[in-house]
Image: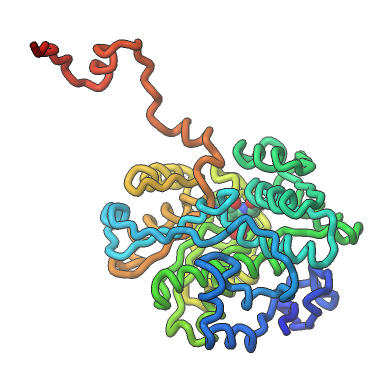
Length: 417
Ligand code: F0G
């Protein structure tokens, strides 16, 4: 049987107990997977027979009862793209992009929500809630609609990208725009879920979300034929995803499916980088940033809730963390779009910007096998993309005007008899 466990004092909680923080010490929880069940699935190869590459291919690795119907929109199974042109531009020979924008609502959050909302329904919840910088709210709204349950999302007023807002709205969530930042909105939902026990909290503090997201690590292993990359680079905001991916790799390692583990490398925007700062100063604590600021609104977070798990993932894997400026993020977004055809939102591009900086600083060597995770689709934030791209040229509806605009000479038509 799998169970929940406090990451600090290791107090155990049942898999069907609704508890967000340890009742003894107040720290956050993680799921301890049923290793016997997982090992059996590996032995029989059952997980591969069950489904194509996707979150639910790993059903035997998920803390969901066997009889439960899952709430799914076909999440996971995203592309791992060999990126030769980008690699060449950065001086790398073995670069890959795991593009999470290919998920149903356009971000990696769907991996966590399919498991989180399935658990919510299993527990009998009829109302789910989250605070979000945008993607979590878009994803929760979609999965709640799919499950036919009520959804409330709290977002920072005026600071989330339009694509994401439109998703939460069209899926019928109750959208509350809080006059404050993400960290403040999160404080409110945590208190609300404690006070009103019928509302089920689905921020990444909920360890069932992390279980879904760990499939990102599993998939990369399978896509690389069970040979882990040397390094995994991922943007970090609230720090759930880096923790989840590390959990996935570590579990495959413990199951004997891998013989090495990647160096986990977290990238944060310079204006909201408490984790990168802690890593650089060899501290085992973070100093929250009171007023986080960055163009990458998805990771505009000053007090990441899963900071301890993230520091652990980075340190245990001998990885690192880096900061990138808004300008570096936007340059990387454009570069990726133009040399690889992969359009990602600014927060996602921070993994590419971080890669560029770490290569430049000699931390990453040119033959390392690097996987960069791009976390959200570019259409989430079309305004930023339009602002930084070459403007369209308006032309008269005439061939000569079009040829002029293209800088090609008008040719005299040869009339054939
Ligand atoms: N990239 C994107 C596109 C995100 O939306 C987020 C987080 C992250 C990276 C960082 O992941 O928080 O697990 O470290 N977005 C959350 C949200 C906070 O509300 O949508 P993390």
